[in-house]
Amino acid sequence: RRGRCTAQQRAMAQQEPPSLRTVHALSTYELRQALVHRGAFERFFPRSDSRCNYDTLLQAMVTVLREDVAAADAARDAAYGAEQERLASEFAAKRAERKRDALERSQARQEAKRAAAAEAAAATSGPVVEVVATPTPVVGDAVSC
Image 1 (cartoon, rainbow, N blue to C red):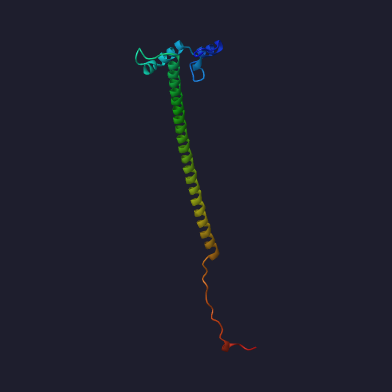
Image 2 (image 1 turned 45 degrees about the vertical axis):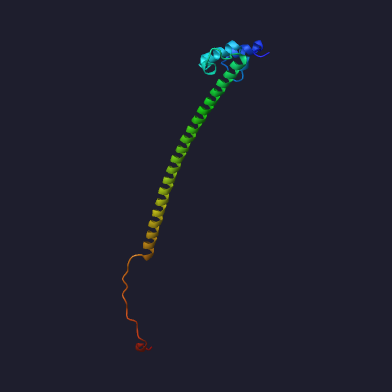
């Protein structure tokens, strides 16, 4: 019963390109045509006397489809990796910018703190006043009342 399928399965297989889910519904002729169309027939059947039957054609087509799936997965993984690298570099750039801004704010706060401390020191010392010393009375010179 190999190679036989329902009319519904055959209609599905003819509507969409062969995939691992629908390849079993293809006839021997359709398998061969699909392999020829993909340029893979000569790879699996290099000589004219090669055993070319439904089983070998199905095995060859499944191999081709698996290779296609693997190539698509590799391309998707590469695109995902490139996207992750792009996002990581954007994140690193934003992080560096935030760090630079934070350092600038910190330096501004430290300078303001130093200026406030210098201003407070100047305010507590006040203006310079010259103090004139007056002679203090001696105990022996006391005036009696």
